[in-house]
Length: 135
Image (tube, rainbow, N blue to C red):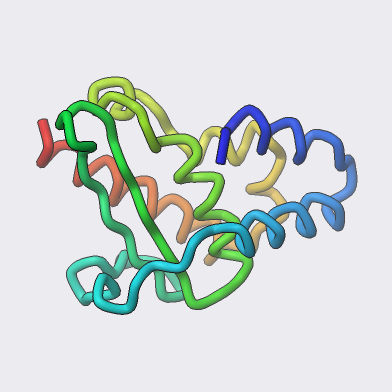
């Protein structure tokens, strides 16, 4: 999913209810991760919900490919936003991004429970940890 499209869709809704519905739709559109990839190594620590994340490079070993899944619909929607932020980026460019800041800019953080906000931060931190391994 394209990040500018997501930003535009969320901006169309002033009230949290509309943004929440949009996030839920994003989660519904996020492809499910195959069960074989839902391993303990892929599990993101620090999330209240179960979140699995895989980060790799494309066939040319240049651009990022991330896949993720969660056991809750709202987190799947939040993951869709995070993946849109980092997918297809060069690792060096991705290292300069902070999806947590994007959530704040979009006005989403203030509506998330503290545990959900911490979960978003944990996912972003995990991405940056894995980026360091790639570089």
